[in-house]
Image (cartoon, rainbow, N blue to C red; front, side):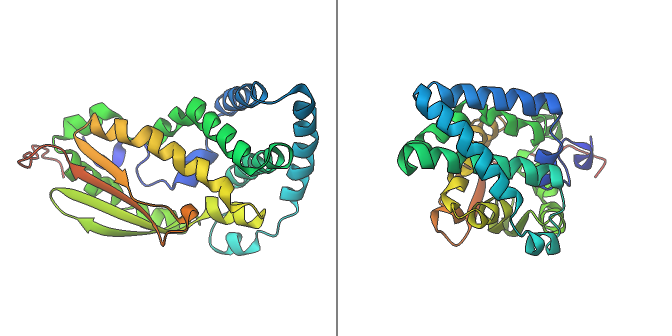
Length: 240
């Protein structure tokens, strides 16, 4: 099995999100609105729809030329993310920031499993024989792919036999939220990572954690992956 043939290899996260099928997008929107509506009053529901439309129009008028210059030209991703930010902004206007954040966290609780769409199949990782060695190869192309797509600026800061770490120092999710004047809208996206990644990586023998994010005001999002079991497993793969 070749690592480069596994799901998500060589793709920036924005390109994966931009490629979600219409059916998946529709399902996520239905779940999101159902989750939101049950937490606000009828009057607030009407207000939300009004403000959501206003905020979508405002989002459509944002100058994204600097992001385009960085390579961010995936219109499906841009539209989808700006709609999310518009929804968050609309919620803030009718419920306040704290309640809006609580509601959007609950939306992520209900939809975060979609992140599994661009992670490698667990069985592919297991067949490789050594999860750290697998992700060393898998992530090797991630910084260049992310930069080319205008999605992230990424540095691999550790690549050893027992641990991997990459630091994100620039993030288009946060930049889009900043353009809308509501950078805190990025926090629920970061929260979704921490809902999905710990369980996924633990199941294949890796401890995942992150000590902070750009959206929280830290200098980077530090994604760290450490081997759960020692000694190092022998890589029996013979094609690479």
